[in-house]
Amino acid sequence: MDSLLSWLFSSEEEELNMLYSMACLMVFMAACTFVTLLFENVPYGRYATSKYGFPVNVRFAWFIQELPAFLVPLCLVFWTSSAKTSQLPNQLLIAMYFCHYVQRSLIYPFLIRGGKPTPFVSFALALVFCLYNGYMQVRYLSHYAEYPPHWVTHPCFIAGSMLWLVGWLMNMHSDHILRNLRKPGETGYKIPTGGMFEYVSGANFLGEITEWAGFALAGDSIHSLAFAIFTTVVLANRAVAHHKWYLTKFEDYPKSRKALIPFLF
Ligand SMILES: NC(=O)c1ccc[n+]([C@@H]2O[C@H](COP(=O)([O-])OP(=O)(O)OC[C@H]3O[C@@H](n4cnc5c(N)ncnc54)[C@H](OP(=O)(O)O)[C@@H]3O)[C@@H](O)[C@H]2O)c1
Image (tube, helix red, strand yellow):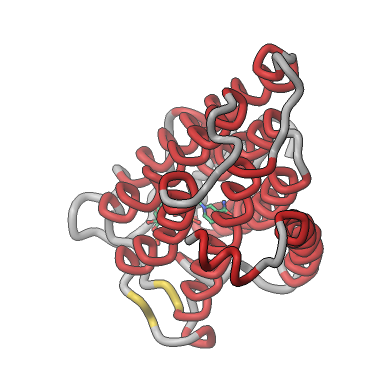
């Protein structure tokens, strides 16, 4: 990995500039995605269509597309010279990232029940995103990010870490509720109940948005902020789309339930 990086970049300054440019590009892509999603839903799950390529088995798709988000950072932390992995804030932020992606790439795909096949284009875009973001987040944290002394006791780090934890637990709990709506072999949809689903249709998405917003607050970098913005754009769209879909599909759908933000939106 070191020789690949030194082949790609002539100096550390060049790599750091590249990481900064990648974060800016991600913010730009989030803006483009926001506009595109005004006209179309993210095409997988209940919105999957053959227009976006041949169907890929859902477990295979989730496992392969998320794997780079775990493997690339693993190589960066353990098999690449990384100057900042001895620092406590960097260690804690990298640990937060890994907690999420160990679950998402190695566990979540094998728990899915009756999920719709993923169109190839959605699968390929998710894979590229995971590779891009995995490198950007963890290379920055493992080799470049410098935090002031005592950053882990700074209110931003403490509040961000708490938000990250609450969001991560909410995301996993909500995904667990969704999964258990189906008995083995079933593929249809039911009204989710319990947990944050009592308040919003996109409880799993609210959890994930909260998680990466907390990570951005604790990480205090354009790289983590770009990821939080991109996640919010994609998942807020999905929460609103699911909410509208439930209202048309189920006459008895709870009227007080909001799309993404309890009591508000
Ligand atoms: N960070 C990011 O940018 C990002 C992007 C996308 C997803 N994610 C995360 O990945 C996870 C999955 O996302 P997703 O978009 O696939 O979520 P989703 O649309 O809520 O679907 C999750 C799973 O639950 C099933 N399901 C959903 N609603 C159901 C219902 N009412 N009754 C029965 N089964 C239901 C779906 O089956 P079907 O496939 O049959 O619909 C799918 O297997 C979430 O935790 C999300 O936060 C993160």
